[in-house]
Length: 447
Image (cartoon, rainbow, N blue to C red; front, side, top):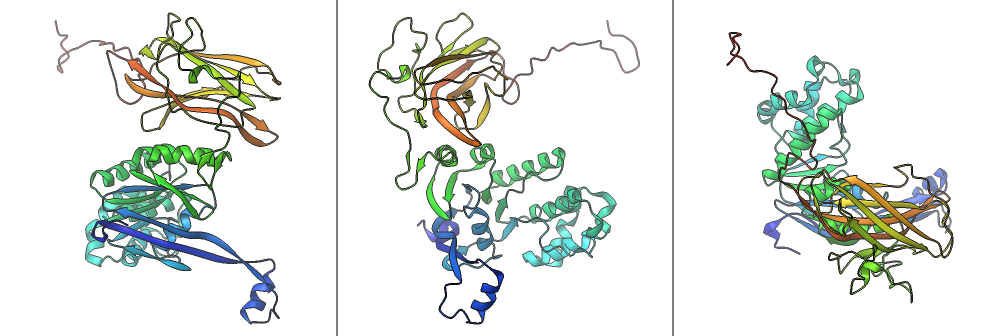
């Protein structure tokens, strides 16, 4: 564990157990000790021996599948729930964005609920007075602030709840899927406030299914599965593990990727070969990632890929705005009825920038069988800003209603976009600027 003076939150061997009953009467009988030796309940571990530390000024993300214990751990840290065993220590005043509006009195006005919630958090009336106008302005619900909250729409309710939680200037902010509330304008304001907290060096514990936000905001990420912590590390690495976990491709005992085997004899992939075959369209003339992060059941296997510039040359350096083609070759080792071919471009932090697949593009695909080979190309103009990116490729599909990964190549190679002009954000809108006319404010046309 880190030095205690550096820790804002310390979670040590935290366990939370719920008793599950088959029938409601079993709970009643057990409470009265009338089970007559029968086992009336079974233990469900919402959390099992979880430990981690959040240092001051860090933004830590918690990710995991549904039921992994993410919300439970936040509720224990904030005191909403008690732990079965283990210890949590917090050094600093917390504001929690968990169940927005929890603790609101529906008969009270918005103003009265501001004071009620502020008092519950631990603020004096004078401190709430100092922050009241900021809360009113942030919520932006007009005269409804003076009406009972039972008259509010659901949108007004969450706006006020968020405004109360976010404007009390906490030392530690805990967020559980609460940034995307209200309309798009309010969501934008919520994200700006969140970024302000980061710039101010606040400590943030952040739970979200939005992997782009996890990659963008977090310094470290904790990955949970079925109540247990299975890994902790950089956002990019944890997001990669989480994606594999979602599709059942992660061996939880060893954290090895299922299906990450070497190609069979005679099936070596062009991107893994040591040398290049001159003139082979499926072997790039540029460096590929020597540690490609790949996995899948290999019923379909990507055996080669390339990037072609506007002149048809193999190159991972593309001029901004120029046409380029991403292509791959897939060999099938079994029947796949509706294969889906895809590519994704990410930034160097692993945040998805753009991408598409044959399903999105409504491409006509057919069932493939053992021994078939499919060659696919995606052609588009690269209007992304100049910079360094990573290219990932994939072939997936469905087995009945179950999504199946046949082969994925994360970060197969880098992609460099060369630009003489960058604008704001990831993409250039390619605007044409026209100066219509100029004149003096008195109406006289300038010469």
